[in-house]
Image (tube, rainbow, N blue to C red; front, side, top):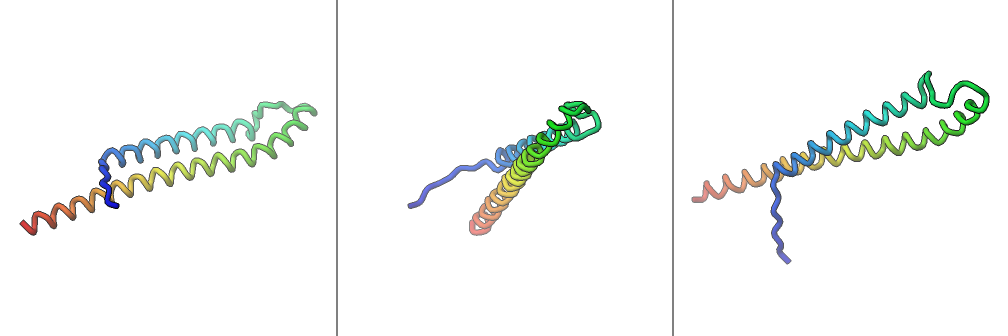
Length: 104
């Protein structure tokens, strides 16, 4: 079975760059979240009930931050893959066009 696929390398590369920007914003947001909840001005206060809450919350938070970090990493890898694929398609197209011109 032979099927054709049309791909605009610049559009794919542009999508990769946009995705990289999203990944960076996500990473920045995760860093702000981590600083806010783990920093000296934590949101639960310094009293006894706040301290008890903080222990439980930080245990869950550690897992959540790991998951968010994994998502950021996956987004970054997807962005890089899109960009690399766009370059590969453009290079293949250029090579094929050069070969066709050489045969003419």
